[in-house]
Length: 419
Image (cartoon, rainbow, N blue to C red):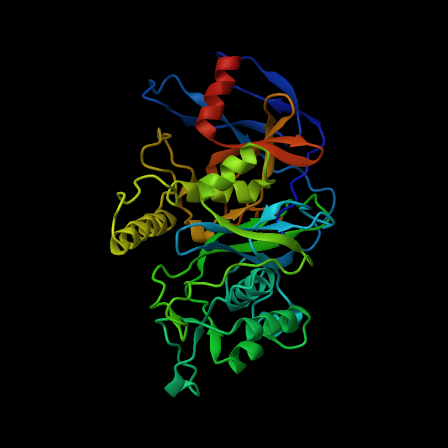
């Protein structure tokens, strides 16, 4: 699936100005020019003892950025609140051997009609039916999991959906549809209708958009979604045998783009990445980090708890996650608050647009990435991402390693202590 290309940045000379009592400093970094613009008070410090933040100034654009390719991706949550990741093939032209969420480019063959009806000025950054259909289609092609609901048997002509169940298909029919859709032998929506189903677009929850930096040759605007599969097994699959599991086991696409398809808890994926057992790029790591605060093994249902108690526990985790995604400001209330909340904190997660940009160079071999910039196309638009969190990335052989999600205020305090 396409993600913003995040490779090591060319080293440039950057001037960083910090107001007294700190002197003017010049550092080497793969960043743009930064200067003082906003004052903060942290950890109960007196307001007169302020740390001046390093604020990004857009650098002059020497070349027109390449046009964005439109893409969609799904963070798929299992009935036990695990997240699906696919391992890309070693020969992939992008993200080789990395673990990614299912997703891919919008297709003129499958979604072209829907794209044609969208305003050209907004379609690169606006959630819509075309993105949602592509998200469902790509998830099906890459993992075999069909996010669809059956048309009500007695209302198929009107297109009404039975909202109580996911569509269940025999393995042979599902795999045949998967191949024909991938090979563009039939439009996904037409195949799905022939099976008596329709894509479950309404249960896709928008969860950030990622834009490739303007300096990169291959650029994408990727709409991310969260989709939570039903918790209850026997009541959630219409027509499924009595003892069939709640969802088909995810499978890779035969080695075309992926070699494995696996569910695991977000915190486990992060631990595997930190141990060097899986390769995660910054966007995946960041999103899994956010999810790990809610979908984890903490506060587990007591040993010997009934199935109903376990389901209730999983539902509480999901409810807490959804509440987090809908709340603003997006800075947690227990964080030390700046004197003025950054404007991006008032942008809900569904509308955040993130174009990772290099900040100052951190420790040896590491780069600090800011997540608040929305990309070159959206400067002065009022859109933005996450100012409060930053990513510390150690690049080894052009691969991201030892990624950490840190609070910007903590990074500033570390910078102050080192002066």
